[in-house]
Length: 589
Image (cartoon, rainbow, N blue to C red; front, side, top):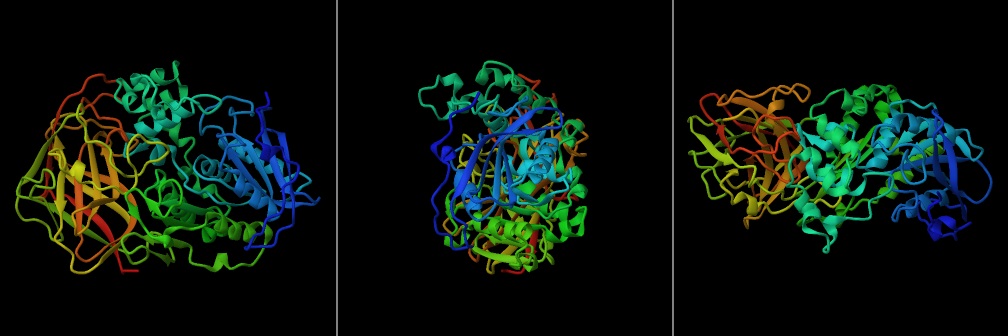
């Protein structure tokens, strides 16, 4: 079946418009419904945008599960074609016009390889092929690159995951419920985008609204409530709760040593897939298959979510925060696909935005060279519950032996407020004032004294939490917060650990009730300047719902439990059990 084309895709030619970045050749032509054969006989269908005149052109490939005629994609595709590129836009396997079964993430390596090599052989291609796109459209770039197609020359993975387990549907072993349900079931269960966005429909029955569906138990059958039938990929994600072969088979991080081409990693500090952006750069920089891949790797991270913006969440980072991704891609593609010496290969490979100071800085690598991993210790008189408590964050280790306690009730979890999520999440994302959740007694709050001098950090952030619980499993959630002089408290970085994974994300182990462990919580990374008069804060709790599913504290497998129990939590910060956050302190930019 041929889906109706937008007027834009049906046009034989489009008029010239002025571009300031490079000369253009004139009108373009669009050819629709081109069959691209895969190695197993399945045909994937694509549209081709290219200059109107005959010739061979460097080629860009965009592979998408969202439909080749999706609004918002065409301006960049048209701009590339007018700049002298042939741009192939393809529906991925099992989506829209393409044949085959839709099984997210699992067929993109071979299909990407076959598409690159098919395009390189066409009479309109010079044989130099690059790839374009963000989010899922970036995941497919990594998958293709790990297969080393001979004609792939460079990739530009924007807002990309490099491990669907670590960067996307799990973090620290905790299940990203809002994303998995919203993207995998509500929006993308079968061949086309589900038109019934219940979480945005004021007329939807109460039981079908997104914000109500997330409460249903067991988690493993929520898909029936939304789609009316089982959604296989959602059930697979729930069933594979640890980092096992199911996930390893599609993890780019297992195969960075196969990537032979330069990759430009573009992401945001509050993006859902920030871990993939950072790991994509560091992984290829260290392990890439060729010197060109290792030396050519680039990284840019701004104060954004799942796309560049000046204002995100509750903060406006100023006009300097915006970067034109099309301009960056044009310089990248012109150099690697057209052979233009525009100097991009001689510029520092890393450019990051320092929040707080609201300015960009360039570096020779990431993590930032010379960063000093500096511990800040949790301390209190035993009453750190809420911002009204006596929790303190200090530079020197505490000498006393008190502990802090709270109860985590999964029937009344701490609600998600801000943080790294996207795509219609049913809660506010990005930097948000944390005081509403910091007022709860099941949130421990540790705050430093006011800073007399600015403190800049840039790099990975980790929480080393000495803690115990009275059950076989629970969750530990940590947030790094910048407290403004007027009391507003904005999240800077966050991380979570499902306690059963204290020995590794591939080795779930039940806890010994009452035993103290040191839990290592990955908080990804950030770049922030805590300004004079500000204070540094760490929040510790056990819930972040519905961004993450609720740990029932029973020790049962994810999706198996329909019952909950209240957990009694203890955080230690003395007598050799030191809880601390490790911050990468750098010279102020």
